[in-house]
Length: 279
Image (cartoon, rainbow, N blue to C red):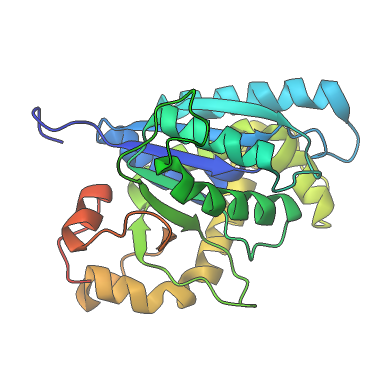
């Protein structure tokens, strides 16, 4: 980023305290390495994300984990008070999102697709879409100045194909910040070393920090390897055939039609870490 240019502002809206890091932690780390501003938001309080601990005790733990994860890259963060597993696309949620987005004034907003597997993800994704146009309407939430131009909206990757598959607009090579992404995920101990392994039927994990990091690295690398074939055409389009094989750790985003639709120059501005390749 040149000294004369303004920092970009990235807002990642996740349903749960670890969603932003899981789906876009690499991009967030790259943004921070360029000196840009990142805000990672969990709309729900995370109270249902465990098999042994529930309610206020878990909420406080997950808030602390979110703070620790954000501190890895120096990002802003917020954990909301909507109930985990009970998030609905209501007027109140939509207006909260409108106020949040207007106040932060992001260049890029990322959230879930309405086709995602989790009801909280689906309902938040739809609420973000529903809020998009209303950001520019003065009579809606008049207590917060309306935007004269909508930000760019994008969807976080998911593997679901019905009613429509994820179509990657941008694929980002996150190998330079892989360790930082792992460190952010590692901060969410209740999720990646307790609840998610239990929920997925994985065996009990050791308490040794080094062994846990090795487990997490293998788990995330396997996930990246599994989604890599679906991203192959986009990787070749963006990075060129000669570089494509070198990119094994990636995050993908689908630019939405509901906000500002960037041209090639706009995409390169929002994703300065990718090469100047044709789209």
